[in-house]
Length: 299
Image 1 (tube, rainbow, N blue to C red):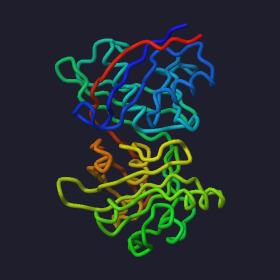
Image 2: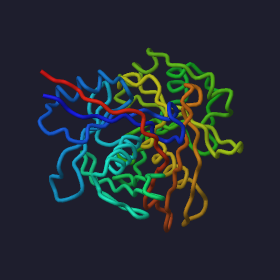
Image 3: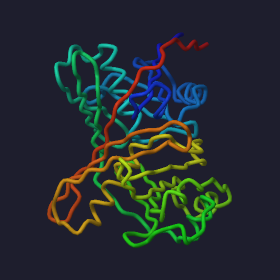
Image 4: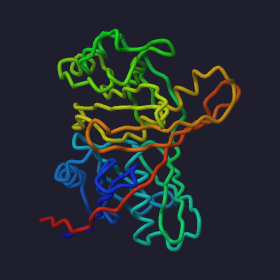
């Protein structure tokens, strides 16, 4: 058997920047084991496998990291929509088209924006409302990322588990220097896992250097030591920041840089809508660049 694949870089306009993604646009017949093997062969943060819709929507999509399947992720949705649109799976798109992917976390709408026949940007809406989980002791998070407790800011919130389809421990740092110093300490991640805390840590710092936020994300126990761009975490962060804003209602936007420390700079555009004190929805979008295509051979 053989399967066609495409590789694109997500959340960038520059080839070999952003977060690489492998997409198999016609994955019918692949077993869970084969999809996991293919994902480990590419060894990207995630790979996406596309199937015919099961419930009448656009496509059914499954997403794997090297460590296993995940119910939702941002950059695979943005990249998969980009690939399918770019290879003509959705026909001609004059200006924009919204498609809906069926995923384990729920229905995921993605809007594809085109100019002069080319895809210029895709934006994904998170499949779940913002949920705020437990707060985590500063010392535990600091240990996991090799920082000092004094590097963590708690003026707005303590390190907190947040999710819009996939949970992260979202943690604000005091400055960019602290962000750059972060390194994985596996014993710290193991300690979080032993406490039944999802050990995917999203660090961020507020800036005003052409971006609003600079971020890094570490998930070594999921096979992702560091991620160049994490759309699902950016959505959760947008929801968290909107939640803590003093305004009871409004539309809020953030321009986020990630992957800089990995030499894979990424630009993520996150936004949230809030009404009557409650975050209603979150989105993340950005550009993509096609890198390669080929064929995978299976026994």
